[in-house]
Length: 496
Image (cartoon, rainbow, N blue to C red; front, side, top):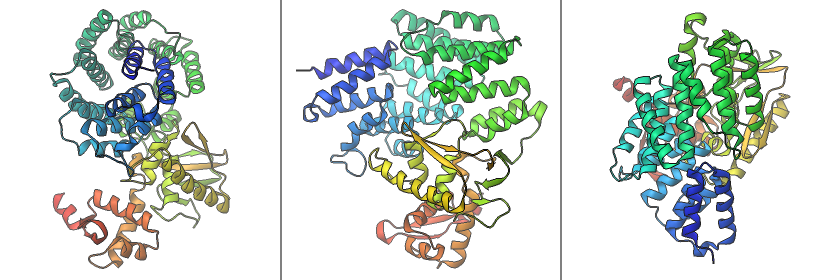
């Protein structure tokens, strides 16, 4: 009989040693071979957390579904809720995770850590720092748990350009990781030290840090990240082969589907060569506000302020994502409706395909994500979007692979993208819809009243009402079937 506790401990050791692939194989085997009735609740929780750490996200979610979501059979503990949120962050359902974490009492260190992860996933390192500091204040942290918090805090300081904060922390981490033989933490700390040295202009130290990294034969992506840092170093030193090196890294990253490395290669090349078109592609093709601000600040001295919108692709037929219409034509989508939200979600990132979890969050806000039923609900909206493209003869396509969705833009067509975050690209259209609603609905109205005024389905109407409440345009009165809404614009104006 398999000893679950010892096998889960073995998986944890493999992850710490930098062998996440072997850990993933072991976890998948345990799930197949050990009957669910033999698992304790504590083992389900540990299994889910290990799955998060080695990228078996759907497997981890399924382990927690008995306690989470619509089909929960028991009330989840704070630990289970936090673990579930941690996996949601990994699959891109950051808003759902943040909402879940926000409801939990600050009684566990994991809540602070996962709150930081939610910020980091959107490149918002400044917001992550307070969460990480609170996490490190917990006295009961084990040495390895504390080091995880420290390496994430160091990464935040590096991203924010705070060398005075990051350098001493990284030096201490390097010493601890080497002494404890934590190979993954050692590698991460050396890579961050090299990045910090490059940003600080100490190119000799950067080269020394990269030389110290032991390239593991287990995971080729680790070698890729080191190669990227060497290529960036060559760009800084203005080596003749620098462009060739960064292009080679970009090609390899594309083959590995390591999309953030692809994005960063374009970022580095655009700045090094003052390539305006590439700057605009990275800027408008990235949904993270903090990342966009960093790029805009870096090129301001030679490029000036960036435009409010930009057309990606061809010019024969251009679809305006914010307005939901074809430029120069009357053809348009109903603002805020599911097909419009699908279009905005698919076009929100020109580099990374949108994950199933992230797409679900964009389409069905304020609803629990289930990896099985969520897939069918997304497929239904995607089918409607594809039919709309066929009916309007817009040759856009959406490919689906490995649980992610990518918009394919034909050479003759283009997308007009706007200087706004991915989560607010529908704002002008939804504002217009809410204005129409408030002009024609009764002073106090239900979701069904609103659906009748807007000529939309109830689900689309509720999404718009939720957006209006969240952004101060509406006030929600009551709960359940008796819920009513009134204008919140006077409250918003008073708060301003």
